[in-house]
Amino acid sequence: MKPLAFSMRPTHYDLIVGQDHLVGPNGVLRKMLENNHLFSFILYGDAGCGKTTIAEATCKMSGIPSHRFNASTDNKEILKQIVNDARFNDQTILVVDEIHRMKKDIQDFLLPYVENGTVIMIGLTTVNPYHSVNPAIRSRCHIYKLNELKKENLITIINRACEYLNIKLQNENVVDYLVNVSGFEIRSLINNIETLAYISKDQEITLELAESAIQKANINFDKNQDNYYDTLSGLHKSIRGSDVNAALYYLAKLIAADDLQSLCRRLLCIAYEDISLANPSIGPKVKAACDAARELGNPEARLPLATIVIEMALSPKSNSAYLALSKAIEDVENGRGGPLPLHLKNLPSFDPKQTPYKYPHDFPNAWVNQQYLPDNLVDREYYEPKDSSKIESAFKERYLQIKKWKNERK
Image (cartoon, rainbow, N blue to C red):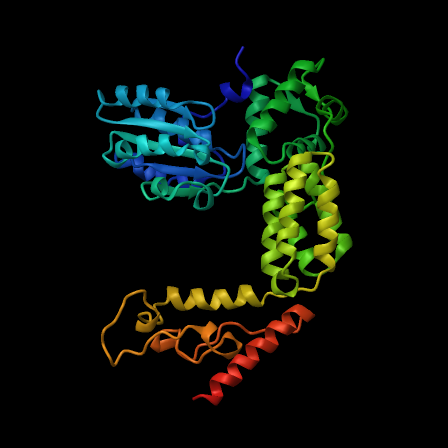
C-alpha cells in the first residue's frame, strides 16, 4: 500500500494550496503551460511546502516525457541515459531533486542540453539557490520561491485527508495540534493523520489519541501562528536588542525544531549585521560555535549554541558596516558613479600627463592623498563610525584622522 502522502499528491495545479503566485489563475507557471511554452526553472522553499508536487503536476499537465534525478544519490551515468532518451523526443522534462548538491562534472555535462532545449530542467531545493546553486545553472533558469504555508492551507489538507480516510477530528484543538506539530509541512501533516487513522478504534480522532500517537513535543506557536521563520526573527531581534533571556527562549524553540542549518545561518547573519565592528571577533566565534554544533548534533548542539547566543546578546552592537555598504549598493543600483580613476587600473600608461598610482606603504602612516572614488562620487561618504566599543572607537579615530589629512591637502 502506497503512503497517503503519495496517494493524495495533486496532479493538477487546481489542487495545490498556498502557491497561487505560481500555479493560481494568474500564476506564472500556469500561464507558461497555457501558452505551451515551457522553460527551465528552480523552485526553492521549506521542506513539505509543495516543490515536488508542483514539479510532478507540471510534468503531468504538460504531457511531456519526464525523468527524475537526485543530485545527492544519482550518478553521471544515470544522467547520460536520461539525456540519450531525451534526444528522441521534441522535449523532455528533467526534475532534479536537491539541485544545490549537483557536482560540477554533472553540471558541465547537463548544461549544453539545457541551453539548447533538449532538456527542460526543474530544480528543487530547500536552500536559497542564489547562495547555493552554481551561477552557470542559475543563469539558464528562472528562480521561484514558494510561499510559507499558512494555517488555512494546512486545514484544507486536513479536510482532504480526513475525507479520503473517512475519519473526522473531534474539535478545533485536534486541528491546532496537528498543524503545530507538523512544522507547517504538508507531508508531515498527512503522515500524522494517516497514522491516527490506522490506530484509532473509531472514526473520530481525539486530542488525547493524537498526542499519545504522535509523541512529539508541541512547540508553543502563539495564537497568531508565528511559524519557524517568525521565531528566527524573534531570536534575531532579541540578540539585536541585547535581551539575553528572550534570545535564549527563542533559541530553545529553534533547537526543538531541529534545523541546525537555518539556525546557524541566521546566527552568522546577526554577527555581521548587528554586532560587526563593535566586536569583530564575533564572526569567527559564531562560525566555530556553529561548526561545533553541527559536529555534535542534537541534543549536545545546544551547548555551543547557548554559549555563543549569550555572548552575542551581551556584546556591544554596531550596524555601521551594514549601513555603509547599503548606501554604496544604492549608489551602484541607481547608476551613480562612473569609471574607475585611471591610476587605479591595472594598465600601464605612457601618458606623461597621467597621474601615477602612489603606493601607500611608501608614505608615512601607510597613507597618501590620492583619489580612489570615481569623479562623480569623489566626496561621497558611506561609513559613519560609531562609539559602540573601544574597537570601533579606534576605527573611528583612524577614520577621522584620515579625513583630517585629506582636508589639509586640499
